[in-house]
Length: 332
Image (cartoon, rainbow, N blue to C red; front, side, top):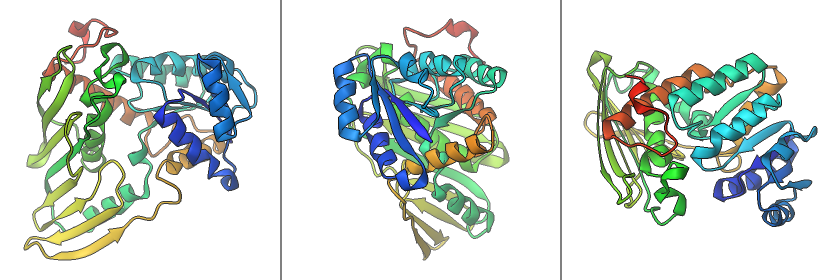
């Protein structure tokens, strides 16, 4: 599977490094694209790609590219996903898939209409840790789930994109989506009540967020994220008999199971093949080989479910971007 990368920032570099370590799995870096051709040429040499392109469309049209990976800022995802799908080119797009439900629905409808594969690169959905945690919960060792706490915070407000409304900046779309997915992987229901508050930057982007989701069966989730402070990044799943502690919801490497008296009964260490990003590539390769339009690990209906939830939370926090469509028409 030959991969082309559009967006040559930190995530583009990380994915290029990952691909270079997967050649023995039949995964190769073929093309890279930037509007700055010199930057693309430097990137090409550094990460051993075959060609450098001065535009995303040029890369997409290359016959040798089997999968386009989009790693641009959030606000540009729709443009490049649409270009890829209109040229019948399979695509893996970084999270969030796009900036709102309406855009996600449009792109996924285009995927179906053009019979072309598209996936969202929410890497935690593809990791082995997801199955391990699910098996612990289904075993009944911690009883019935009653509460989940999840946080992801990094002091990254110095990054230009985080403070740029035109690029979809702010903490929620960059960081908050991870604890949202962490909760949603283990509670399949939609919340019946949503509360969300944030403090904002001078240009009205969310800086730190606290979100409460209430689910059927008296389950509650407490979610937080911040782009100007650090945290332990832990996820805690609380049950009637004990609890599960996940060391880092963004890339779990250790999972601990405790009984009600805080007795530690199991520690599971996760050994990755590369760095955690390989699993979304494996999922794409398998789906393409089977002729699927979506990955069973993050199917299109789940992408839409998450984007609907993002919109509802964003409404509660009154976070609006310059590129937003009429917010009065957003899902209620």
